[in-house]
Length: 525
Image 1 (cartoon, helix red, strand yellow):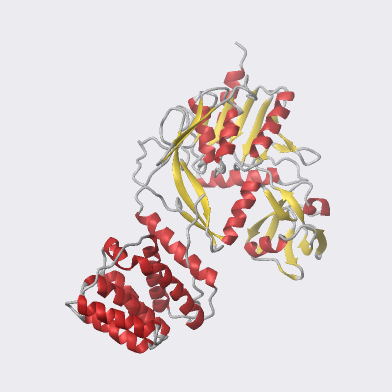
Image 2: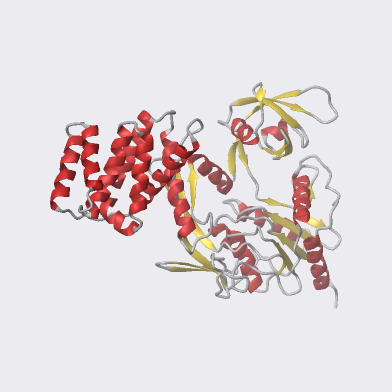
């Protein structure tokens, strides 16, 4: 996987124009990191440059060195390659002298006067790693506010990624992405489906935090927390905001955490002391909760229609799907609704394995990079067949989830119902940075469905082009924004432990369309 590096400065008390200037200058310099080349020299200016470097680095006379560099910059006869190097060093000298506005002006002028980035890189590229290291060091030592080195590096990386994203042509916003160290932790939690904490799902309602559900078997579940409880304090301190509460509830397995909640219908606060543990985060859910809080995947026990909701594709998702299908098959499954709505994707291998559960032969997906092409094919063993499948998708169904959807549609194993999917048909790899500041998520290949058509929606793609997965003819059902919110509220209610299955207060039109399709398939001739 790929990772990008950006800087973020703590500039809360610095004037807006200076903050913007610093950011622009650092971003411009950060972009130069990606290339290297050699510089040309001419006589007199070259001598001045050599003298300036000696004065700056050996004698430590920064002000005198800046004056020498200034002479080169102002000399209309000087070779432009030397002017670029002098302009760069002049900006660094101004930083060392604490002249921040002058430093910003000098560095900004460098990129303004040398719009041809290729030529500029050829001139100063070989010096850039040292340059950025020096800039970071100067800011750490002399900046008006104390700043964190990791934040500086993060800002630089985000500058590079943002620039590439906006000008790459083949990339959309966020196709190329920087993940900070904290974001990497969250990313790994989702993929590994494990976390050390108490096992609750929280949501913000105004300034309050409400417990949506607790994971069965988790410390929160065993300790008595319920859906609807309002989290007021953690270790005696206010729980809000949400991001802060999530971090504070996590911790080393075996460590205690005390929290106070306000329970609907009760007066005062109730206090709970829970012991953190490793929690497995499921990706598969069903129609309703059983009495023991496990999932019931049979939507209608009379018609024997099952409903499996796959929220994302992590390392345990294939086994979860296998367990759900095995349970339904044992209960006489005759038709299945496979719900991939709002599924953002996940692991390529997981998507291939899940598709393989439904298809017994043929191509699942082809992955093409610049250098190679890899085909993934279905195997007969372990295939679940003999029943029709209605596949629900929407515009939030993306990436690995689209692999599953395209495979089942092309093999006519399922009828696809809902909306056209997102069209993120790319493989993104994570490359962790040696500095430890984070990682870059970089597109390295593209997906192609069994039919050979592309699934990726490029910036220039039109609605008439092949991308994403379209609903089958006659089965397009586009939800309004309000319907989507109602669907997500219903989903949250179904996920809650210790509650009766919710009474649908809205018509889930895609689900109803799926049931209509399955009913036609199950009619006895």
